[in-house]
Image: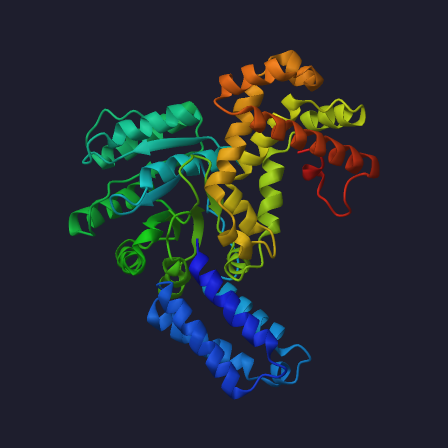
Amino acid sequence: MFEKLQERLDSIFKKVKGYGKLTDKNINDSLREVRVALLEADVNYKVAKDFLEKVKEKALGEEVLTSITPGQVFVKIVHDELCDLLGATNKPLEISGSSPVPILLAGLQGSGKTTTAGKLAVYLRKKGRKPLLVPTDVYRPAAIDQLLKIGKQIGVEAFPPVEKEPIRICEEARAYAMKKGCDTLLVDTAGRLHVDEDMVVELIRQKEVLKSREVLLVLDAMTGQDAVSVAKTFDERLGVTGFILTKLDGDARGGAALSIRAVTGKPIKFIGIGEKLDALEVFHPERMASRILGMGDVVSLVEKAQELYDEKEAKALEKKIRKDEFTLEDFRDQLKQIKKLGSVESLLGMIPGLSKFKGAIDFTQAEKEMKKTEAIINSMTPRERLLPHLLDGSRRERIAKGSGTRVQDINELLRRYMETRKMIKKFSKGGGPKGLPKQFMFR
């Protein structure tokens, strides 16, 4: 996500920071390069033009020109304007009012709407809500079955429609939700290959019947400027309240995210960052601006860790560490927890200063190594995981065959395990590195 834009901006800012003083000329030269970077990222031309004009106006101000560190002030101006472009602050879902609160999900066919409904259900359940998935796409073959299957997979109630008319399904789903004690309706509407009159009329009727205050348009970020034009059309006809951008973990250039809010005035509320049904993030403009400029996003990283943090498990692990009883099984469990935080690449992008190293790391290989480590430990007996000193040559050969690896891989794993054990023991004695969040102490 935004990798090319990150690289281009990082290169431009290095030059700007190298200037002893900012002048009209070097500011204009830098902004010209920023303009090219934005257009290459598929940002709307008018949006890019307005953005650069605002940056230029502030960059030529007395505060910047007379600053001791003009380059850094220039970067801050770009960051602040980028935040403003993306929406300044996060706009939460509107889920107040009498239950069940309806949330209408609209979008073109193939935008990932049905999967997003499942992701949103997982998100709402974590927030203490009891959502009901409502399939109203009666046109696409197996669309209803897909949503019912997703509901079963994530353990969320899904309404099984009898009727084949979307308006009737909405009415019956509302009654069903009240009977089942569900407080939120997540309505997966029908999509088309393009915006057409029949689809828009049907969506308007569903919105009126449900009296939905929240109408979220699901957009595929991979479609670039097409996503912006679709957003504008839907907003003009339907009156959307926000957007969910999907596939931002792919090769999307990111221009849609930077253009949609400026073109429609409506906020991006969520972003899809993977295929798994928990891969949905609340969209925070300031955090996204920091990621784009390579400043990382530690807040989101800590929030992810907090979601996975289990105080009871952590205390049990802390006790084991203090007694020097950290086993290979614990080592494997910690790797699993790290994997739950997201891909190695996405985690690296959240740590300030490390996003620049993305190109130097083979993330596919890193993920393979983690899987290999799990396979090796799983091939050991419970006693071997507890007492690794038992692993003589013959046992290591057996484990290598069982895990599809080599004896050298097992030797390397044991070396890393012993190093990790020493490091954790050292941190636990001193209370951990200064400033390290509690979630990272034993996770």
